[in-house]
Image (cartoon, rainbow, N blue to C red):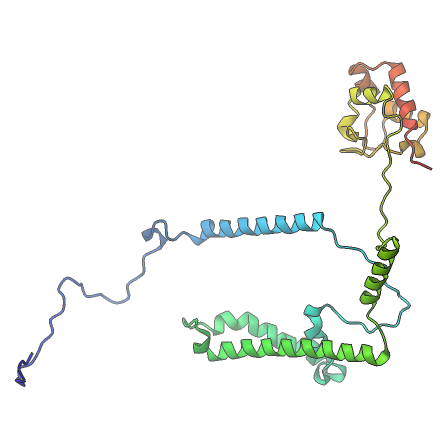
Length: 291
């Protein structure tokens, strides 16, 4: 280089680093095995983890639905004059089908044409948008379609709900779900049932201290009917006396019924006598619900 203002005409040649080898064409990137502890195979390692997470989420949802069943309100009034409306997440479709070009003479266009184009574009998106750019402002077409769809959903949802509120106000109606909630609150204040759900009354064991209770356990009846007689592999025996008398129960013990095999020999092998079986049948016949 020229120094001290000396503008030398000498040609400057930049020499490359001889330690860097010149590449020959496209260099294939190394696979995941070249990065131990930092990457893994998609199949089966990563996919198996995704499945396991999905299973945990599914079990969590099932536990939630079992532990917290959907509350039952009062039955809907079929004779009531109401304005039907779907749940909030379908409001935009509800409003869309009310548009002139999506109903009436254009029902086919609205239900098959427009939706077909929309879902078709969604299916073709991975094949059409193949660029490596992932920043939304560098992908004008895909981003514009996304924002347009989002704006349309928000607009249609808001319009559907606003029109519904105006229709209810003009006709002087109160939404039926609000009526049911008000009725439930009123009944709660009066100490009355707040739901239409029918709760089964618990049937108690009759003569729980009777010696036949011990015979019931000794005869291995608890295997199918459980210690509390509520049933396990077999049906509940609480209240069995409402439908079977002593003779009928003896017949079932000796001859079986349905999928239940004869149990008399099994009971006698467990140490019961004919008299014990007779006493057990008599005690079971006393198992009746309260009248």
